[in-house]
Image 1 (spheres, rainbow, N blue to C red):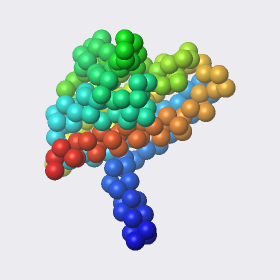
Image 2: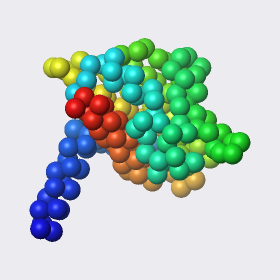
Image 3: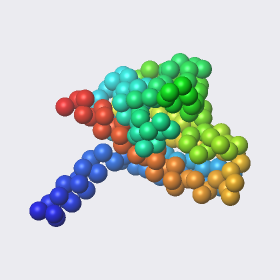
Length: 176
């Protein structure tokens, strides 16, 4: 029985994992990571869920410990923000490009990068693929980090890959 449980767990991980995740470029001054997943919904439905991080962002990668405190105001200048109860807040990024059903781009240094002199651009590209949507997520970071940016590339790639897998799982669950 334990072997069957492990097999089912592995199959579950594969089912929600992005199709492709990679560190594309690394230097001491920055890095670029990318992940891709195919989702079983049209681009408009993917975008509608994408701009609601409270439905898919991992609580483990939030400041409040509760993804329900996260929101994206999907317009140029809009905030990707999180409420920190009882009366605090954090800005994860600022929307710099919003085109429903096609692309969302956020300017912001995420997580521990926020405390450093870095800039980051998180882009979600949505392209029709068959009856679903190909979601390509890239994050490009540059600037000063103590000890060099290269130490952050793999962990950031892993965390963002988890977020894309969670987005895919949330959308696919809605479609069933």
